[in-house]
Each structure stands twice: as structure tokens, then as C-alpha cells.
Image (cartoon, rainbow, N blue to C red; front, side):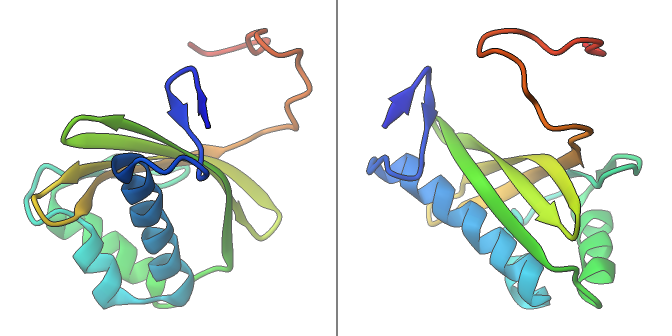
Length: 145
């Protein structure tokens, strides 16, 4: 199903489906505390970025993976919903909602195609402060940008 360029999990195009599957693999590694899988999911170069909720931006493979290894020593229970893929040629984005305990986070994950698999190059998640009850098409009140 296509809606304004966003692709839902029901879309069967290989690029969109592959992005959704790569995103799901990331969250499986996160939930399972699987260091090997987490390392394999990230691209094998230093043009990586990770912004954990409430933290400064991390850049480079070593700092990004070190942060995940610390988290995965005692991984919190994480669930995701509403995953949407945006294929962009040899790259793509997936947005989703993370539920960690009682916290809801909006997440964006970026992937690049390395010729064999989709590899993560960016993860950013931030808190959803309140249930969004706006009318469709209306912007948030008090938006920062």
C-alpha cells in the first residue's frame, strides 16, 4: 500500500520490503542483546551516526557500536510499530515508533545498500511527549521546527 511516498509493511516491492526487514533485524538484535547481529547490521565504514534519546550525536563506527554494546549488556524490552519505508535508490529510510517500557519514541533509521544487504548508517530516536490527537494534515502546536 502506497501513501504519499511512504511504504507500509504490506508493500511487496523488494526495496521497501528489504528495508522493513533490515529494520526488523535491527530491533531483534536490540531486544535480544545480540552484539554480533548488531555489529553486522551497521555499515562497515565510519560515516555512521547515532543519536540516542537525550544524548549527543555519535559519529563513526567505533563510537556508535560502543554505545550499542553498552546498551546491549542489559537491553531494555523494546517493541516497534508503524514501520514505514522510504526507498531512495541505493539508500532508504524507515520510520517507526519504539515502545521501551512506558516510553514511546519516534525513530528514524537510515540504510544503504552495500550490494548484498541493507546496512544501517543512522539511528535517531526521540521521545513522543504526548498522544497526538490533531486533525490529519494539521501541524503540531508549539513545534520547534
